[in-house]
Length: 130
Image 1: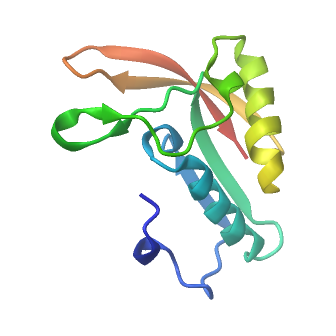
Image 2 (image 1 turned 90 degrees about the vertical axis):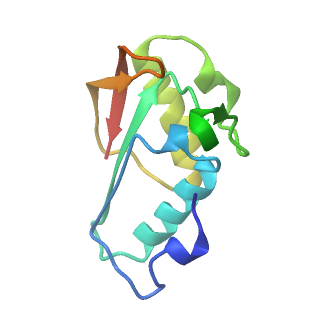
């Protein structure tokens, strides 16, 4: 979970970073986004972050034995409420991405299939930002 030893070196430059359906499973989603933003700032001009997030945001950090625990960093409470998908996208962009200096050029809605603990599959709405 965002361990320092897992980070690329300061001299690493990437034109495209992808983070697909990870934020709701990491204990520190804001730290992860800050690091991605920093890496993008060091990238060649025109670098892009491709970010996939299931909305509404329902964090569940997987711990030992398949149990989930709450994240240590929390996203703003309005993101956790049920609302129209388009409203959730706008709130995520305004309350999470913009303060980190990440600008949304485009977004799309995709179906996301999630296997449930104990069996079955849930169909969720995924927001893909770039």
